[in-house]
Image (cartoon, rainbow, N blue to C red):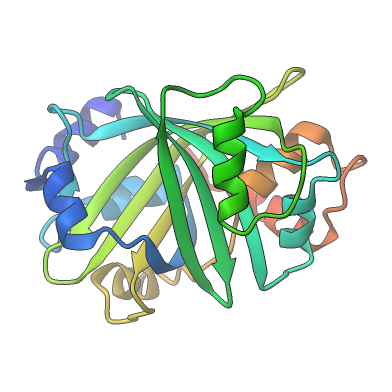
Length: 256
């Protein structure tokens, strides 16, 4: 599908503004269900969603660019906790909404399958150490790791859909790019879909469509994939993620 055709399809969705979306479905405490699609699968299913979802539009823009800086300690404790499948774990990042030039420091706390996100407004991505105020905020959320450092940057484009008859949001992340001081990795052949709900509702239009297409939920972390891709399999423990890395590589064969 050409970029022009893609943008034609997303223009067929009814729009929803940021204020209306936050009022209707802020979902800061939620359950997330992820799916990994090829770019071909994504473009094939997109038109089937327009009667069930509205598209987030900000200043006329429907496909928004995001930039995130992830922080971890020298031991990569957040990564290791995820690898160990710890049921109570954190993720710390700065996220910038590029077009609107708004940035937040966010702490995501995942506990027993639920995700709670707390955040504060910041001037910009730090590009270096946190300020004392920012470190204090992170500590206040329950994070006990010390001396958090910027370990990778992640850029992507996101399409956000909001359920018309269901309290849920659906995001599609495209053109995933990971960078650190030494390396850049681009995963342009996959799209990560994430369904955000107050609880898992399998009658959701998107859930139903994925079942019809025989695409199963797939747990995946952009942060963890980025760590493995940038630092190398020889430098980080990744055995629990091995199947996920192989799946990402295998999906390249299904992209025209």
